[in-house]
Length: 393
Ligand SMILES: Cc1ncc(COP(=O)(O)O)c(C=O)c1O
Image 1 (spheres, rainbow, N blue to C red):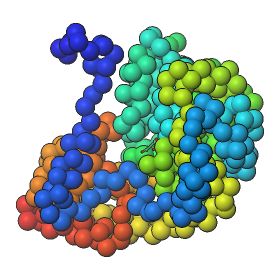
Image 2 (cartoon, protein in one colour):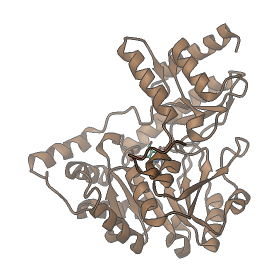
Image 3 (cartoon, rainbow, N blue to C red):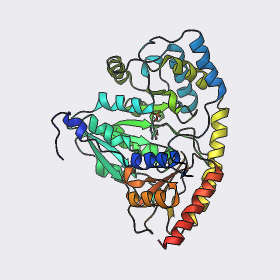
Image 4 (cartoon, helix red, strand yellow):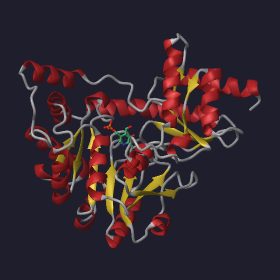
């Protein structure tokens, strides 16, 4: 890699995003009036509920527009503590909760205070695009744990044990997962927790898709099993996916006190508080019953069933049925193109946008998001079938 002396070396290790190549091209085609069907969305396609917007209007009207305490207003931290207790069986006091500008910010903060040069961070693969780059930004080393479609993209305890070295400091665990929709069972999480406790490995548990989980399953938080694993876990969550609030930028962690104190210090000198108005909106969201999340999840489940049925009938594809989130990670081994070539050609020739799996570490897969309505899913998959047939691919 050519080093540019104008920029810090740490930044030059960061990879450009293959995801962006597709999403910006799809946007450009749309702006030219082309009828693009997109399976690229990383956010729910529902509007933020009105009662949440109303709380934000009210905050503005009352002049709640100034700095707040760095780690969040007491009302919000109390609401988060109550949510952790009710949904996850986790007891955190407000000083253990840090509210940040989205779960992405929360994860970066956690990594920043935990790891440095010489440390290794374990990341099951396929992984969310930002994890390895955040680890690189912290000058630590990402170590990938390759999973298999056969095991529904879930890391086994044997996989985990093999990957641990003397330098391993953190495991990033994401369930339900982006990009695969896989969900770890309670038993699987318990087994992983035992290993992390025995080897003193911290866990960053990214639970942002907690509320989007199918087939009557219930999300389980790894920190809930014992005091030992609680003391090693940073539980990450936020409002982006559960309440369709991606633009509001509210994420949070519950963490052991010393780690929360370190994040607080870091956030004090980097970003300060998340937006005051969005915090008031988040209080309204968390204090309300889960009706909106439940309705949205039911709609995602219907779409999951439909898209899985349609994609499974395409013989060149290998589909693993997701159990949560709003993505299908679909094998394209039957097609003699790598994932970027496939995604570019599909967009150019059939006006359908999918995300190349290479962004998530897997070049023989693509990610379909079903954060779009059934009519669009129908239209998009039909276009893919016709394109494959026409091109004899
Ligand atoms: C797995 C995962 N974690 C975290 C985030 C970040 O969420 P936020 O928008 O709250 O920063 C995303 C967003 O796509 C995600 O997919």
